[in-house]
Image (cartoon, rainbow, N blue to C red):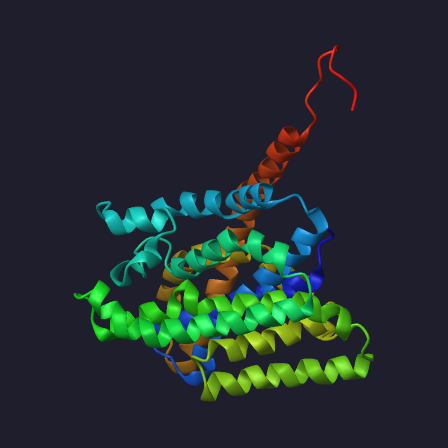
Length: 346
């Protein structure tokens, strides 16, 4: 599949949002505009679902090859980064996190290895159900039905979960259960569903005039900004706005936001997401010489530079070779086996 520049750009902005919120937390600057960067995760989810739909319809080679490609895409870099964060004995939480199972218990959700791994667990859960979704959701109508079903799942999980989770995890506090409820796959599934719907919106948006696309694009961005202040935890709202933004960009809107720098950051975004805390740790001593907004700006700038530099290396030496290796193995297993000379013709 030909690489789409807007996909890389959106990934770039998503990871910059994540860096913004985390450097804001470290620098003591957790105000609403900075904290809104956390919704970069939901932008990742929308873009991920859209990209998978594009790839699925381009390749159309089934669930097995799809899951193998996903494994080669995320596991090598994820596993190789674990020793970088491991500072104590290996316990069951570490083992669960390494197996992308840290979302199985409230007290495991935020593991000490690969901080932010909860979102990678949500991605992995989506990968497991995606082949079934992609095979059955074949129209905008069905994508809308999926979105409604995912929203119902989120509502049921939120209310029934908070009622019954204390029975399953009696030692967890109510705050722990609330966070667990919010950041596990059932609550985030609706955002992925919005990314699936985005795939079917793109052809319809192609019929709009350029000025109409630009108006819708910038209106959706404003809607996301408004939600970040007044409804920061209403994940489906962000997913909806981001899906509209992506559908507009797929048809040429928002070109001013696409450039080589943000596209490269987007290509390296998975490594950046994983290595960001190492970069923050190295940039923090310099930022500590400043206060207030200046501290945040210095820390964010240093983190972006360091994380992008490190991730450029890991993308070129780890991620891309592993992706190619996965594709090579699939290509070899797909080669037709030689038939014996006496085999009947078909």
